[in-house]
Image 1: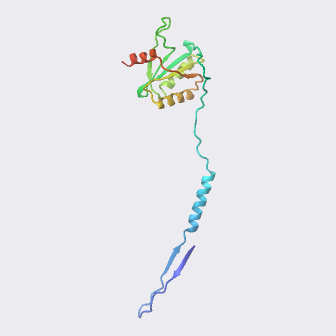
Image 2: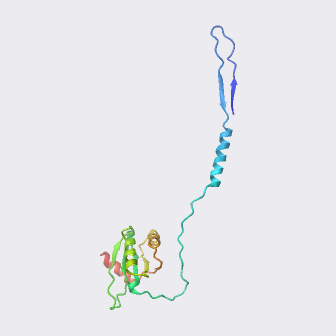
Length: 175
């Protein structure tokens, strides 16, 4: 609380008489108590931000492979420099009945890979996306492409290792 202390003005002097000076002292203890009470109240009543996590369903560990129809597949290759290469169908240069894959390059922008996936989803129901991270791809690229799968509501996608045919296709396209 505030209190007023009275000090004597000293020995009386002849002449002018001075008024007594009074000093004030403010006790800060109640204000500190109030600050800690408010801090405790807001800490206990707040809701902390919950981390957002994407649920992935991993397949059972076995060596069986599920065949994918070429007409229902889209292959995405993650390259260096945050580039995304994609083509429709499967890359099978040894099979002469299959046309050669036409590799296209884009970015992670909304008008890039997202638009390509949405366009293919409208053309082909039951699309299966094969994601192949390259040796030069960054972890952030993998997170970004999984986010794109969630944004475009793509239900069927798989993470697949790159084959030598895919590496050759990217090398020829970047030359």
